[in-house]
Amino acid sequence: MLLPVINVQRCIACGVCERVCPTAAVKIEQQHAVLVKPDACTFCDRCEIACPTEAISRSFAIRFAPSSQPLTKAQLGQLNLGD
Ligand code: SF4
Ligand code: SF4
Image (cartoon, rainbow, N blue to C red; front, top):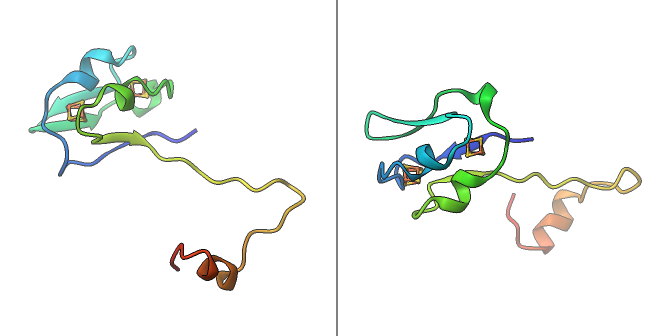
């Protein structure tokens, strides 16, 4: 599970994430949200869902099935996903 990432450029310090977080893992400090207690995060996504500016979000990871091979760089280039 991945912890929320906060984009401080987007954060308007509204405090919504702090209010909806059930474990007080995120707080407003120095004009933006900060993940003050990462160990307390339960990955519930409430902060991401509630944030009005999409400033806080949990990244996602692409997982390949165990039997499949990751795409090669050439294949990724064909998909226009960049390097
Ligand atoms: S994902 Fe849930 S527990 Fe973690 S910081 Fe956001 S609201 Fe709090
Ligand atoms: S809800 Fe979004 S904009 Fe508001 S304080 Fe949290 S991260 Fe910043």
